[in-house]
Length: 338
Image 1 (tube, helix red, strand yellow):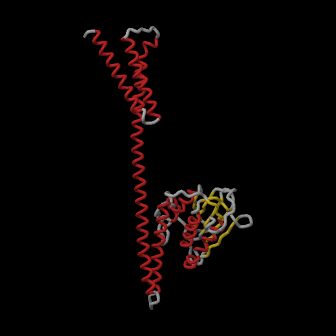
Image 2 (cartoon, rainbow, N blue to C red):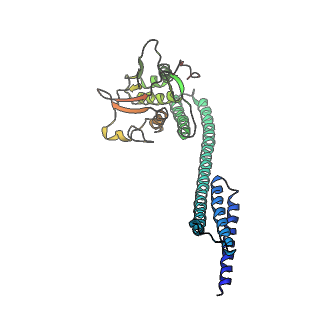
Image 3 (cartoon, rainbow, N blue to C red):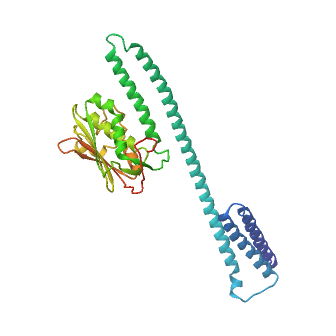
């Protein structure tokens, strides 16, 4: 081939390639800071290719070493721009996939929450109707025991709804720590379980190892009362009639709350699964099987620890250890203050 034609073809290829790189840079220039870097590299590479080739064809000759290395420099710049373009495109694709997966997850969770709300609302309506029918028969001769049993079953169904909703929402809501007086909270929980205690024939004592006045304030999860209620309720269920459950509170770092019962306790080989959902390790009598799992999650949310040990002489002792909060401030036993 004629050398002049060959040179012209090479020059054309350089110009077309350089213009292509510069055109690509213009496309990337509109897509953010990383793409701006890509555009700059591509544009410099393309511009160097064109300038070097045009000057060379015009007969310009330079003896500086950089003159000879300009084509290699242009190639390196263009190659770097291409690598940046490929990796940024890959990252953008993965980011889109992650965003889509996250959106699907949010939609799925929203759908589940909606279904739970609808189901709980409808089921509660049916429970209300059932209670109304029971009230029509509660004074009929020979029906008192049957009505009581049915009402107990309805109460358990209501508890199941509340517990399931609480468990499903523990991870979906952000709760800020609040100032809580654990002594007042413990007494309020025990008072709230008065009917339950009377039904099982179990006494519950609250012992507070704190300085006078008897308050023990910490900044912790606003659901800590529910965690304590689960433990006391469970202890009552497993205590023999005439027995005593003790709630012991001890100041320190960490602050400790122990719920002590003298029931059957738990075999050593079953303790590892004690806090799992629906665990048979300590099947909660007439319960949902979620109480201890909920308690563990609430305590973990408060950066605390939930533990189990055998009560001396037999029984179970559950302990909640919470970080001490010297600056917790005053906390009253009123629910609105906790």
